Amino acid sequence: MSRSSSAAHGRSGTTTTPNIPIGLALIVISLVVAGTMLLLMANRAGPFKPARDPKPWNPSTYEYSWPLPFSTAPPGPSASP
Image (cartoon, rainbow, N blue to C red; front, side, top):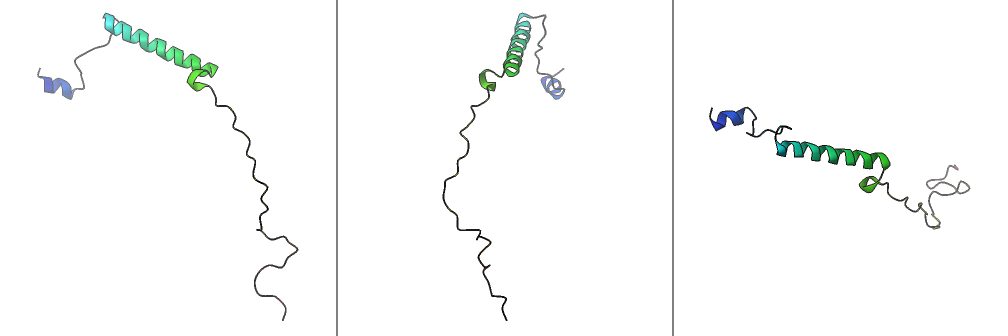
């Protein structure tokens, strides 16, 4: 079997199984990392800690001129004949 035919089938030539020491180490490390991340997420700790609440929005006391109060006449031509 040539290299091109094995590459066409999606095989990289290496296997990761618990039967070999490197495969076992990769599996154990992956499980430890995944378990640690799940614990951090469940406890909302580390990078999953929620951000502190920002200060509430406090608009300035600027007096706006629009919209006009109801007591004034709307702009445009008057309705008198």
